[in-house]
Image (cartoon, rainbow, N blue to C red):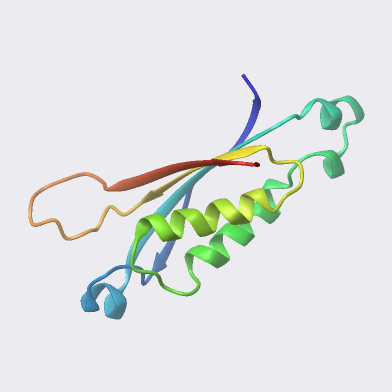
Length: 120
């Protein structure tokens, strides 16, 4: 099993969605990002430069989450995955986007879209 670094529960108010009301009012979204990479070199040298700085990653993910609205959670998840894979040490990433305030017309806890992407 590869080493993993996870940022879970990153949250922001954003304006993604297909419907006009979603774009006007916005709603809360949450993101989980689980990165796969080899952390042994960083651990051996106790060196932040040989791993992913999760504080910087969280800032980049937040910028995408609060940035240009998209219609689909699938599109948002892909944009977030692209940010993670831009870090050269990341081999793969799993992104889950949560939309707990979606209007489904029935009681529910959460709607999520999860994707996994890896380097070719």
